[in-house]
Image (cartoon, rainbow, N blue to C red; front, side, top):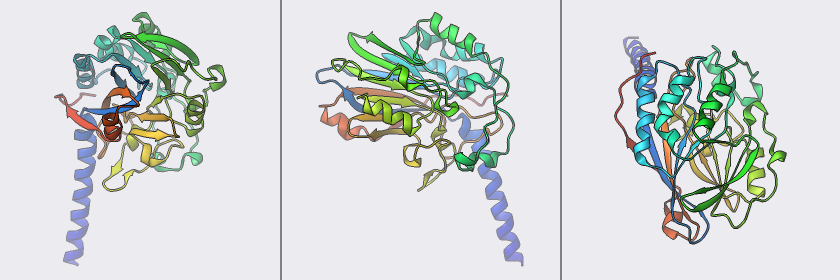
Length: 320
């Protein structure tokens, strides 16, 4: 009995330590993930793209705001934001403060469910339930129009059901996006059709990487699709990976770079935040991603495309 009691106490202590680490340490262990992706047309100069997603910003999250602002020193050619910026109705100024230096750079964005609606308290076990068994619960509406106005005022392009051709550093990029498939707001038919095959890059954006939407981008010949939403699984087990993706995407693609079909590449950001009601991450630190896009003919890029390198920037714990 004494041995059994020690086992129980030891297990309880380990569980408590794990929860403490996941909630107090890892969720603010801001990380930069870097990867090389061979998606550009032959002869194109490399393009550096900073991917920001799932900030889930609260007004008092000062270290997150400082860390994101510091990313501007990476001097990317292009910034891509795939949504879920907000977690509070008063968080728009905090998001603009965090992204402030990055808003001076060329940028693209689409919104996610937590730009439109605030999170609500719910049983954390629901996160682990199969998606089809979940009943979606919306919180109060969030001021997404104010956030959109701030982004557009600084020159960022809203790609919600829009296709445009932009020029970044002398390179022509066809960019398209859809509204959040997680809320079934996507209307791909509004951007359907093959993009300009002579462009240096054909780039698609979506918040939730639902396979039905990824298949449409791939069928139209997009080189790269960028998404967020999954939080990389948020809870990952060593040797197993993400437990869930919170969408129909398979667990193996919950974060990072992967192939989607024979031509298209997919990048899913593990994001920088969590719901304020489930403020934990385990084996999945909050991240931004710096992608170096290179020509498809670059064999070195092809070899390294499936790997990523993590870099730490210093930041303290948040208050609130």
